[in-house]
Length: 148
View 1 (tube, rainbow, N blue to C red):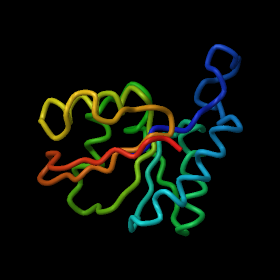
View 2: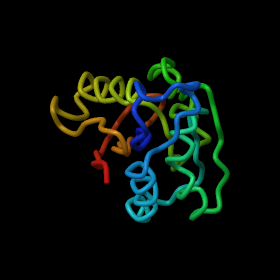
View 3: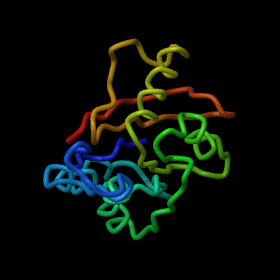
View 4: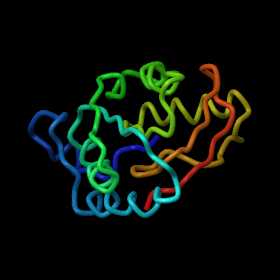
C-alpha cells in the first residue's frame, strides 16, 4: 500500500478535491516509486479514484505495462475496511494499492494492534509505503518503506 505522493495544499485548492493533482515534489516521488518497487513483482495496480492517487502510480503502471484499476474502496473516508476488500481477495497477489492518509493511518494502527509491528515503527507520510502480507484476511507480516 502506498499513500499518495505530495499534492498541492488542500487549503490552496479551490476546485473539487478529487481533482487536486500532485505537485512537483509529488511527481518526483511518483517517478521514484518505479525504482523503489523494482525488486517486487507486481501483478496489479489499484487506486483511489482521486487524481493524486492515480498520478502516484501512473509511472509504476507504465513501467510494468499494467492498467490502473480505480476503485472507490480506496477513497478517502472508506477506511481500512475498504482496502481489505482488495487485500483480502485470495485471487490477488503482489498488488499495489494507492490510497489516502486516513486509510494508511488505520493500517498502521491495525498492524500495531495485531503486534505485526511496534508502535512508532514506520509511518504514513505522503509517498510512504507498507508491504503487507495477508493470509486468510489477516495481516501476517509488514515492512515499511519510507517516502522517497
